[in-house]
Length: 418
Ligand code: RIB
Image 1 (tube, rainbow, N blue to C red):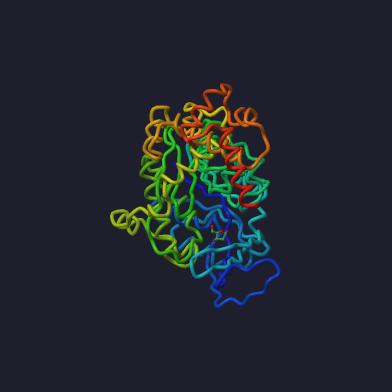
Image 2: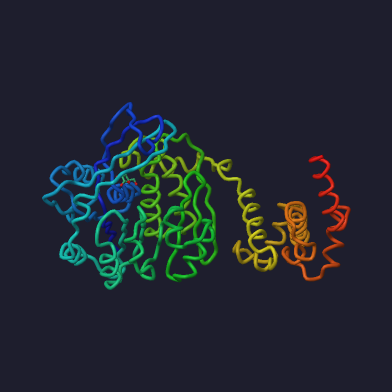
């Protein structure tokens, strides 16, 4: 089985700034450094450093010889790279002291992949081989269609997200590696888990791996959504963290590792990458990653998982107040009814039915105070048909019937005015 990465090569100009420039502003940078980069190049180097042989294909311009040398130095096979008479792609990167970045891309040679060149490259690959792609070159849809026809297994990282991604036939993809923006662009849902669930249900062939920066990654494993926390490290530069993750992930999976261990190792590798400045140069070697895997601790403060779950439960109840059910919530969270019920008891200290009643009563109280809706209208709006039942549970919580509560609150505010 051979691995081919059809991707971009960039020269990265990294400007250090105290914060990212805003619209209309001019800022001086404290330094300029030039690094080898491009999602394609970075991912090829990550695959090679992870210990898997990889062929890199893509176009480099007149000023890009140093990128080919860097690929070679890192033991990437460059025999398929094409030299074109144009400028090499480049990236202008603003980097802040706390490791955040913002990137402007110039496509240059990365936009010159002709169909003839693509066909020529793919001639050397056959059924069972692996193809990796990002979205920094042209003709991505053509490469996917041609590779799929030949029976290659496709790993796709649709970064950076653009309209071009919408032309892709995702049913041809085996592994989709996305960040939150890309996942939302493809899945259209608001939370990472919802997008993982939605995309993997829509395209049965896809394994989705969604990285959420310092919070870690969500991924599918035999239909189940799993979570891998990121590792605790001091962040210097996040550039190429995602590329490192993808290279290590692909290497692990093609070597036969389980998705659980491949995602864990990829997480450790990208944690090391963010502790160093630069793109390709920050990608660690396999030995370093294996050592770090024994030492690094998960960054559990970055994500208070319980808080995220609580927010999701509350959001579901708010959005579905009148029709909320344990079954509906369990489906939204992708858990079983039994587990969801236990989870609610653990997180809120009460059962689902009590929590729902609380939310309905709280909303009713708010409407009673702030609107002129009648008590009957409010009862209906918060999801009850049986008005006497609602009056009883409202009285249990607020010590007064809805009508008495409204009257009392109105009296309070009249007093204030007076
Ligand atoms: O993913 C990081 C890369 O994105 C940088 O190296 C830069 O070239 C941009 O393509």
